[in-house]
Amino acid sequence: MNKLINGQLPPYHAVITGYGSFVPAKTLTNEELAKMVDTSDEWITTRTGIKVRHITTDNESTAFLATEAAKRALVEANLDAGDVEIIIVATITPEMVFPSTASFVQKNLGAKKAWVFDLAAACSGFVYGLSIAQQFIESGRFKNALVIGAETLTKIADWTDRTSCVLFGDGAGAVVLEQSNGRRGSILYSTMHSDGERWEALNCQAYGSRYPSAKPLDNPKKIYMQISGREVYQQAIRRIVETVNHCLDHCDLTLDDIAMLISHQMNARIIESVAKRLNLPDEKVFLNINEYGNTSAASVPIAFDECVRKGKIKRGDIVVLVAFGAGLTWGANIIEF
Ligand code: ACO
Image 1: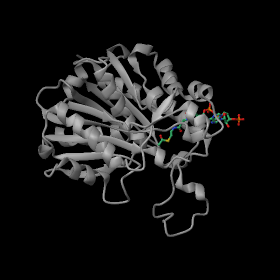
Image 2 (image 1 turned 90 degrees about the horizontal axis):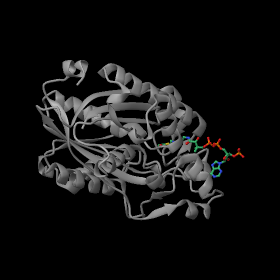
Image 3 (image 1 turned 180 degrees about the vertical axis):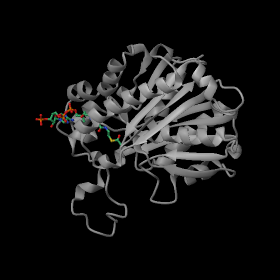
Image 4 (image 1 turned 30 degrees about the vertical axis):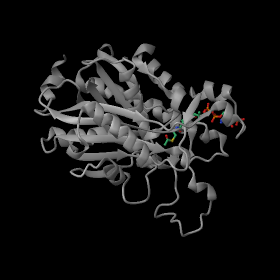
């Protein structure tokens, strides 16, 4: 293993001991979407790689999805909910304005010992969350953390706008991080970035303090997500490539050391362009957007869970988690699985 990582690792490691995901049972295919807006399976498939997405019913909320994913991760980690110390829920579609979605997850799990909070970094939220939990564990102050990415984006999608509604799906993914003296399964390095100047590229403006619910909106569309698809497309490729190269450089790794790139699933074409620019072969790039669409903060942990369960990565492999989203935000975690 490379010298730099060995030289920089702290005495405590944040090790992934459990992982799990959950998506709603209800699905929406491209063919079904084509009956709702002027689109086609052919357009959606060739432009995005998406074939189907899972969508919540009125009775299914973000905290429900988050709780189900968390339960699976806790079982895998063999950790009792009552022993969880920190719960972080990365989401931009929270249960309500307050309290946090994490408060509901704590209640649902019976994780009485934990302190909990939500993290709003859009599609980068889970990667940010892992980085934060990593710091708490490496400091020696906490022994474990439950990090969840959970979203119900279909509840803020404009189902009359074909340019955006075809892109999204609902779901949740979770990991348990535990303190260890051994490095197997640990997060080796995390890097996080933001560019608030470009906030307008991806946003949902109602109902925060700028446009409170009691005040009439100047544009009723502000209750939905607005995206500048082209700008996001270009920025995402640039930032993801930049971030992966930075991680490799910082950790003294080469592309040959990477067993799998698990990117936020926003568009298969974006991920394919990233892989091409990095010169990564197809078998080292995980893609599951065809089945889920873009699930924002849930996308990386769902992909990670699926990747492990399909046997595409094995213990000891170097895995890169990378994400890009609204804010703008972007970041990556390097894991020795
Ligand atoms: N079906 C059919 N035609 C469509 C559809 C659709 N669903 N959507 C757009 N079109 C049309 C457009 O109207 C346009 O027609 P025109 O040339 O007659 O004006 C044409 O297709 C091309 O549109 P573009 O926007 O140029 O298409 P592009 O190839 O850029 O793909 C896409 C659009 C898929 C949105 C791409 O830009 C993208 O993936 N961007 C990033 C996605 C993104 O922002 N993700 C983050 C979401 S936010 C979050 O995750 C929280």
